Image: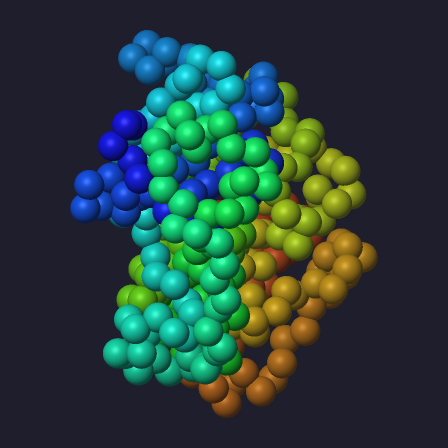
Length: 319
């Protein structure tokens, strides 16, 4: 850990904050997790790792092309647990020369993002002692997440939507096959590069899917825009079915650049617009709407399973 040179501030989260750093010639993401903020239910006991946060445990044991890789972690035994992961994605600022060299259909011209603060370098002990105000002095890094990617486009061609969404579905299917739910699926937890290749991040809320003899989840740890009707109505849930709903919301956002439901009442009523004009732009519009209808069903028992999403005809069209 001593060889890390910290550079950019990415952002704050529920349990800590994230910065970038250089580890030799490799740029990495460094997540500082406050020990005091980790819930008692968010720890795992492992014979090799010992007692670690669930995020460290899952990233250590899982491997998938669309999962961010854990490169190492450090526990100071007092205040922080520090996770070092690969840094994936590109800045979706139009000033990025990578974007300027490529022609992206739908990419709009954006003003250069303002950058403030200093280059901010130091060792681990220096950074871990920074307070919130001091952390803001690190040079902000333009986000590489899917939220920013969507915002950088006027629209996505259908083939790009399918390419992005297929990757997200595949990694969620991988998690479900290993009896794990992410529990906070959203565009801000997906980083994406200039080739529209994605990786899922932030496993702070991840958990094992309850078995038939275990209690269901009774707390929602995600983002309300992606919450299924049963969550809004206060029902307990198992996990995979609400992630299918969240995937439906994400697909809608990829296509229309806006959330499908304007209020919790609309979510509960499954009241969302399906513009007929989409057929003029997407040759698979009919199939796409069918997929959305299968994922965003109020009755969780009738909602598509992840395998059915993977095998849906729209997912395999070549338009």
